[in-house]
Image 1 (cartoon, rainbow, N blue to C red):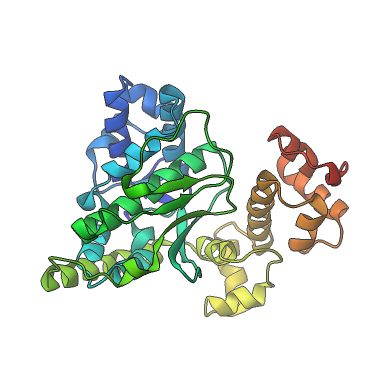
Image 2: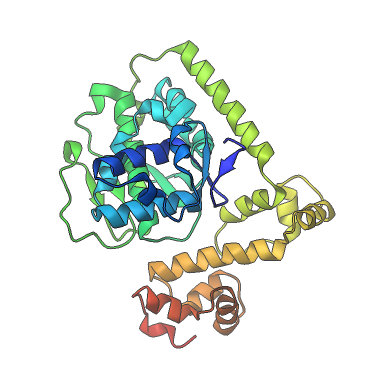
Length: 351
């Protein structure tokens, strides 16, 4: 992504997504000043299609929009607005693939050149082609809204790629959390959105993955993929060592590995990794704590695990040590954090 990132947040998002959001806001009578309030962004960012925005600034703008609009289902409209060209070279690389499976492989590889807020992962369902959307930050109402928006964006992209052959094929989107009080609008081809899931996902009948993509152009495919590879290399070169370590940790769940294992993953010695982290004002312990906080917050918000179970999964010797660490990070005990989210568990006790 563009090295000249604007706004706040470690994860970059293409300004194209904010520009599309601003179009929705304009149609609803929302001013640019109100949309960008508190985001640290200037109005001129909406004229820069090649810019990269920090995720915290983007989510602030999304918070402002959601507060103004008040309709969760507007996320469907937002996703459908993201036509092929708005995905940049990634959209063209996917469009000019042989099959949807090949297009999906390109999305897995290149999606972070457009939006770093999520990881895409393949599902293992025997009858359905499944794609999981894994946020790199803790779950929230805004993350849920953005996740629906992006999943619909991917669903729309698949229909655009396949053309008429996909018009009658139902998709299924799953989201965490309870459904909104407002009724779900009609979806294409009997598709559905399912709530109270453990994951964000998009799935289709598995047979769709072998469908041939019409109007493929070999020259455009080659040029688009070459540009995606160039963007991906530049993105990796621009990452600090701390960011690279953080990305490694975010791919893991539960107890985190020792420093030497991460050093091996990054093809450097433990001493070199320590030295480079120190030069950036970071430490492996802090990066591990940041990941533990992200993971613990997500599990507490999901409400499926007790505090004891979360402590065990994160590698703590007992729940009291985990609770002490969590309070040091947030100022709240795990149970208080969960109660504030309305998800208290009787088995949590008072940790």
